[in-house]
Length: 110
Length: 113
Image (tube, rainbow over all chains, first blue to last red; front, side):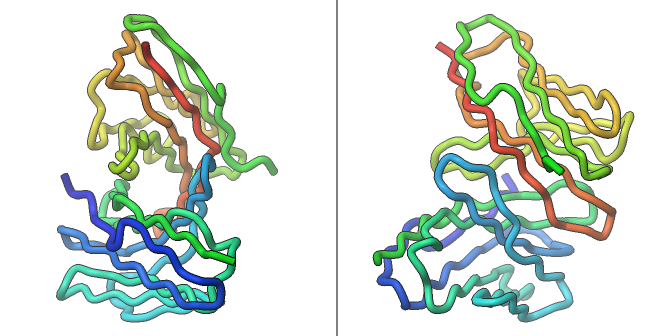
């Protein structure tokens, strides 16, 4: 399987703290994306970083990409209870297929 | 603008029954995808369609067939359902070739007994 893996599998933090989750993947990629999934819902796209980029920001989100280590991290700053969700990375290659990781379950305690 | 819609939301089948999951998008996207999500496994690609008239196998295509009826609609068919196909099924669409972002439907929760 070319599926990536997120680490940790589960994360519990207090509101206002930062949350960091990591993604490791196996093959060369064109881009890497992060998605959020609230319980019982479909996935929502958060941010995309291309293989020639090292860091990207969007609001309270910061994504880094290290292609030499085949890894990425997602940082959510000043977390809120509404950030409670599962977070998935997805890698895009030259074709039309995307490979999703196994997800990190984030709980933000008010 | 409804985005990506899926029907039905829930379905229970007996082993051996058949059914078709429907998906439609109103964003004029070229690419459409079917994934299944199982606990602890993330999303796995079943089939995808890069454009109207083309379909390709993904990671886990066995036991499924697809039809790209037109640019808007992409259906997934289970010809003879098995308990191993109990899962949540998501349809997604994507815009242009350079766009990585996928838009997901709300999912279909399928149970095969």
